[in-house]
Image (tube, rainbow, N blue to C red; front, side, top):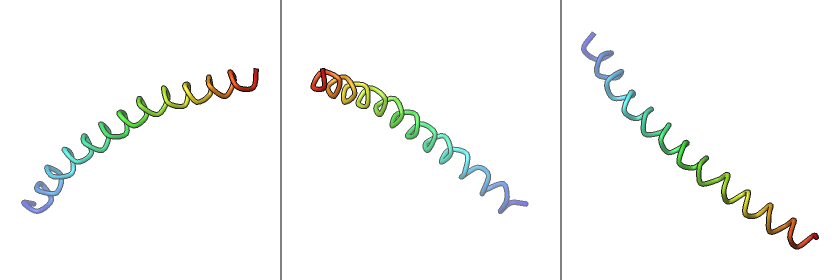
Length: 45
């Protein structure tokens, strides 16, 4: 039981960190794609 509780305690913060990294990457990914799309539209038009 002690080993399983230790595993769950260690995996929860790691999951929170992974979720935070994914959120930050998505939030930084969409504005970059929007800027690239707007520049492509400006060049095409």
